[in-house]
Length: 76
Image 1 (cartoon, helix red, strand yellow):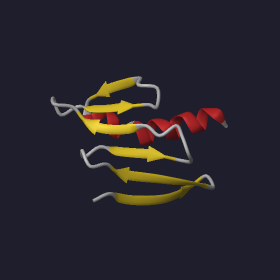
Image 2: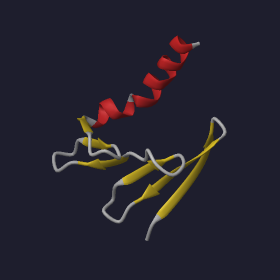
Image 3: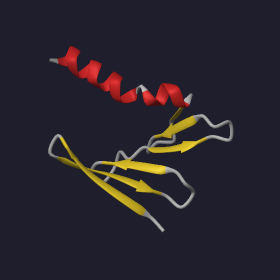
Image 4: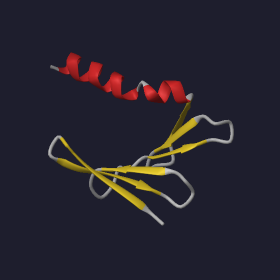
């Protein structure tokens, strides 16, 4: 069973979709939908549409929201 979560952020319908293998797809539109999943070592792996990926500790992944806020401040 697939679970959907829709969030309206910056006038864009963002969708979180839980995949059958337990991964979560983060999507905003028709493409550029990274997939996040746990590795065998209980780290976080984020993979883009082109097969590129980054692996990080869970504590690092939890900082992504705050990092985005800081980036947005410096962009203003």
